[in-house]
Amino acid sequence: MTPDPLPRLRALCLALPEVTERISHGEPTWFVRKVFVTYADHHHDDRVAFWCAAAPGEAEAMVAAHPDRFFRPPYVGGRGWLGVWLDVPVDWDEIAEIVADAYRQIAPRRLIDRMPV
Image 1 (cartoon, one colour):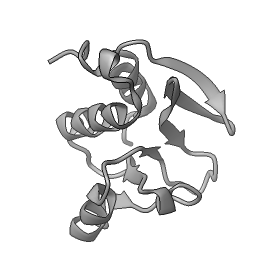
Image 2 (cartoon, rainbow, N blue to C red; image 1 turned 180 degrees about the vertical axis):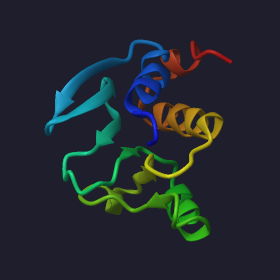
Image 3 (cartoon, rainbow, N blue to C red; image 1 turned 120 degrees about the vertical axis):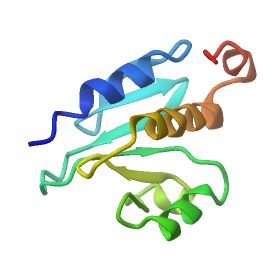
Image 4 (spheres, one colour; image 1 turned 180 degrees about the horizontal axis):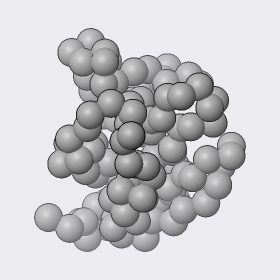
């Protein structure tokens, strides 16, 4: 059985400047003024993932290259958001990069400048 990915995802998100967590649409969601990452287990269909903001064209490229690891999430996929499966083997260094990139899409410049290196 794969360990629950929520604590690791939460730690990555909350390590970024001025991030807050609250429940939105029944799931843990991380904000830096606006949503940049949301956990996705609400369909309870035995799939666990997160959805996040992505740079223009990035989500499409990642889904095309690795459809077993990435997907276009419902509702926000049309706005360029990326879905990342967490119920498959994941590289947590890569997940950290994806979360940081999502943060950069939403956070104001003054907070981006304070991000850990």
